[in-house]
Length: 358
Image 1 (tube, rainbow, N blue to C red):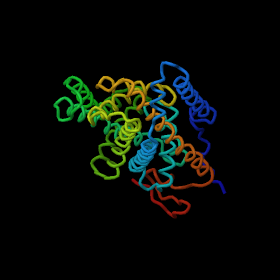
Image 2: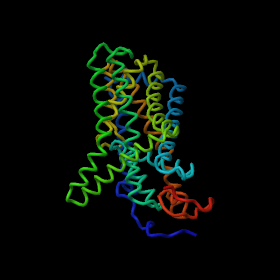
Image 3: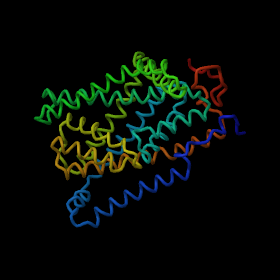
Image 4: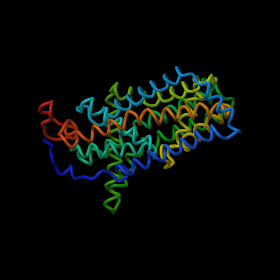
């Protein structure tokens, strides 16, 4: 028998309604078809067309497998940050649903986090707990990126990592990474000070949530949970490996590791543009960053287009079915999401009495 609660009445965010999701998917498909059409029909792109015809299927299969492992790493990080009491089945369904949302909605990953927040709330978790852990999760996954940007840039600037003779091309990313880390470390105290001085209730609430989320992220780091490091690092580094496999799929010489790492992180900033699937933003950012570090423009375009195809297809193929299953479960049973907020014991179908973590 379906279980009804007040939370069941909470509407899904507008951007995740069936009509909006279908429209976003259709836009992504249309853009992909336009790109394919240009490659097929425009005479000036014949060289790129021939490059794609010579793709090595084995490397592309490896790229898809690496992308699946990257998605599973995301699931591990999600479960570690939000709720270790949650079953692996539920964690996987939520994590893959978030990644599917990110594949058609691009706001630096915020689209997927918003969907995950709605799912957790629908499952019975307190809004405050969700908001704090969402901040913590965003910071922890971003920390891997900015740390690699700092270390990669420093390696290029000092010559420890090969790839560029320009000290500036290494120093600028290193300084950007160091600045981002410093801002993250002080943002908790700054948010707390803003909350104490603000006279506007909404600003106070947002500032308090931000500050508490930063401190919860630091607390999670202090626990030194291996799953947290494996999940957050694997999510990004395996994605870099997908890009490397796409270079190999077309017999393109792989850029030095430092160049590939730094260009990947810099290029991903294009995903901040509010374009469905990040199409154009991420692609242009990655190609531009690789060219700046000395990669041939045509080589970079071929590898990046293949990489983006894998990045769009795999999370969508895994995530949308997972979201459909999870939504049916939310309507039909009170499962282990209800055990993820601090508080009392709850009865979970198939697991008995579960105590909510403090």
